[in-house]
Structures are given as C-alpha cells and as structure tokens.
Image (cartoon, rainbow, N blue to C red; front, top):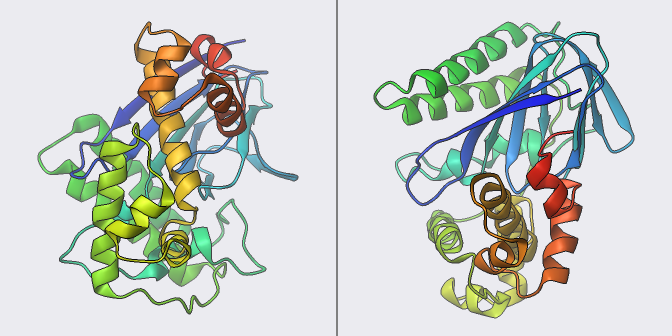
Length: 290
C-alpha cells in the first residue's frame, strides 16, 4: 500500500492560500480525517472509494465532486482494487471576495456556511448543472498544470462560475441575513493579509480588534461571519498549514518548526497539529497520506 502526493500553490497578492493537491491512493490506503483553514472542492479522477465526514459516508467514483468547509473533519478511503486519484482545490474565503473591483456577495460561499436541511457534501451527478461544474473543475486543473499567462485570474473566474452554478441549481443553502459594509470588508481583507504575514508572531485578539477599531467581541463576530472560523482558530489553522509545508520541504526539527510557525510551546503545537491533521508532526513528515 502506498500513495503519491503533489501540490501546486497560486501566487496570489496578500498571501491568499489557493492550492490544488493531487493524491493517488493505492488499494487499501486512506487519508486520515483532517481539517484546514481553507474551503475545499474535490473531484475523483479515477478509481473509487469513500469520503467520510464525521458519521457520514459518501461512496465516490470517477467524476464525483465533494465539498467541505473549514471546520469539517474529512478523510478519504480507497475501497476499490485500483489506485484512487483525487484532485482537491483548496482556497481561503477571501480568494472569492478579495477583488476590490467586485463587491463581495456572501451568497457565493453559502454552500459552505449557510446550509439548509437538503445539503449533501457530494454533488448529485444527475443535476443538470453537474456536467458544467465538472467541466469547469477540469479546466481549473488544466490551468494549474499549464500555468499560461494570467492563469490565476482564470482559475478565480472558473471557481466563481462553479459556486454560482451550485448556488443556482442545487437546493442546499438558506438565506443569509448577515450584512457587512463595504468598508468593513476592505478592512477585513487588510486584516487577513496582516495575519498571513504575521501569523508566526503573537496575535492577541485585542490587538487584532484594535486594527479594525472594534471591540474584541464585535470583531470576533464579524470575523466569523466572513471566514467561518473564530480569529483564534483561523490563526491556529494557518500556523498548522505552514508547519505541514515545512515538514514536507525542510529538515528542521519539530521544535524549530513549531517556533517558526508561531507556537509558543511544543505541547500546544502537538495538540493543534494532531487535532487538525489527524497525525502527529513526526507521522505527518514520514507519511503525509496513509
């Protein structure tokens, strides 16, 4: 049993995390349940298996598309006899609304944050919009591979088209009554850029709230409404994401990595890392995918 893993990351201004991960699982292999601070759309390219989200199990086969928000623990199992190839597009919410020329419409992310009772993580292939969504996803994958001029913009446009199709043709969202002013959205964009640059430093809630001239409790509510996570959890997950990259690309020891990513002690680092990735740092370094 084994696996192959490849990851491509977009270079987006403001350190916005957008990446495409390709995982190939041999028969009998699996990816442990994990979470991350990004949203995710995944498509099975070949093989068949299962996606597990909490107590829910979704059988998947070639062409199936699933989605997860940034608080859902999910894992993937190859239950077939052949390798299972899966491609995952992961992106921060602000990738959708960070363009100041395009007013933020929270509805684009409703399938991640404001779901109704009909919501399912796996998109119905019988839906009339599915073939278009599938085609757009495949084109996004091609853009990551070819990297033609302005491919970052093309990827964003195609992703927004996918989200718009899900919003229009899939009955899985409810009305979101929250409202955030345009000035607040701009301030939040600046805040997330600040966090992306300074996540390795101490970032107390009070300090972050002061940057937006808000009371800490109000700041937390606004932050959660936009990002689906509390400020503290968002920062922890960003630090763990940085740690996974260092574990994969450097020979630094675990203590060095923990300190470089903003954790003040090893105990906090181990606890957060295991909770989010489902593995210890040592196991992740030797086996990013099981």
